[in-house]
Image (cartoon, rainbow over all chains, first blue to last red; front, side):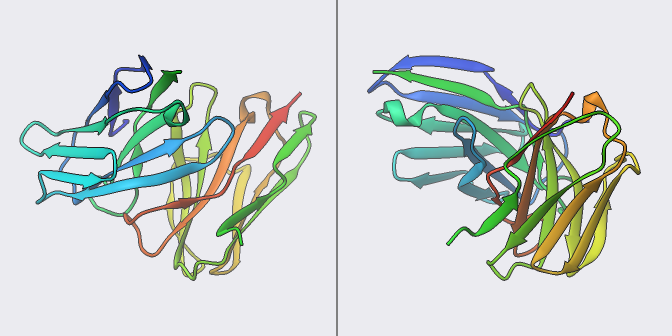
Length: 111
Length: 112
């Protein structure tokens, strides 16, 4: 069964606003990753957070991880039209031998 | 200098045909993957190879046969194509299983 589930499925915001996407998973993990996919392109790695970390920052991205709730959130601050894309969380699963992706959140940033 | 390159990018073919998608990575990674993304954007792992050895086969029909001639290449051959095989197929690689994955740009397969 699918490991990660993103919420919301779709999000539409104005440029300059913050966007928050959530991810829930089912089994224990070693790390959780977030990826971005622009329309018609491959996935691009954004950030990795390990199971012993609670928060991580990279530029305008902030990721939190709550292993007790088996959930993570991705916050994009001061969004730009170029942030329009699908965002996926991925976990390395119970055995750490593969990445399992959620269904993704489609983010649309209107200028 | 594309890190993970796959060809062809677009492929339209008739049911029953056999087709191949090629993939190469120049990152020096040990692990390579094939993922399938369906029309709802759900991304599912199909195969994983580590140093030319198959380590993951996710209940994919045996019409799909991956081949890894060396650790920089992982090709996907599909026999007797069916309508349901229409999807985007992504090749990817990583230094080790569970690590950050680098994706190719995808191969859009349409079976008519």
